Amino acid sequence: MLVLLLGPSAVGKSSIMNELEYRHGWKQIQTGTTRPLRKTDKNIYSLEKDIINEDEYFVQRSYNSIYAQKRDVILRSISARDVYTLDLSHNYYDQFIRYNPLSFCICLLSLEKYVDRLVGSGRVDRLSASIDEYKKMIIFSIENNIPKIINNDIKKATEEVFQWQ
Image (cartoon, rainbow, N blue to C red):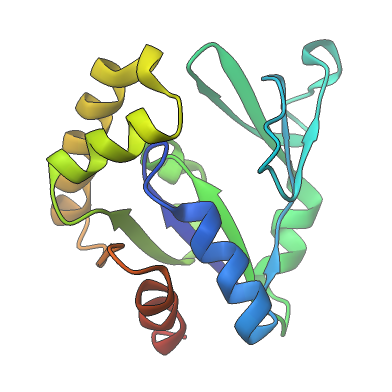
């Protein structure tokens, strides 16, 4: 089973995925990226831009970086007995909709809290673009009838996602 956690940077998608793995044994789909790795990155590996083949990978472009997941891993996760999670920008949801994954939009209690989270995580360079993405994601979740999970407490948000399975 594949579960998508949709949302812009710094809303807590990775934190919720880590909690789901720790508390419930859910697996995370590894993502390759061309951006420099952060100390807090888990299940993310460095990927060279020139080896990314769109026949082999699902590809997302964001903030001058590429994020990619192996296509065969995603396809196997859809019919697996185990539950797999994937952190995804809502902009790339259309690549996955045909697989009918369980999906959630992760957001924070307010736009002000989102700005605080961006600043706190050192992502000030993309503040304006991230705020725009956050607003678009809220509209997207309404238009596509995707449940929103308010992440003001990581453990509560994790349990809310878990209850849907």
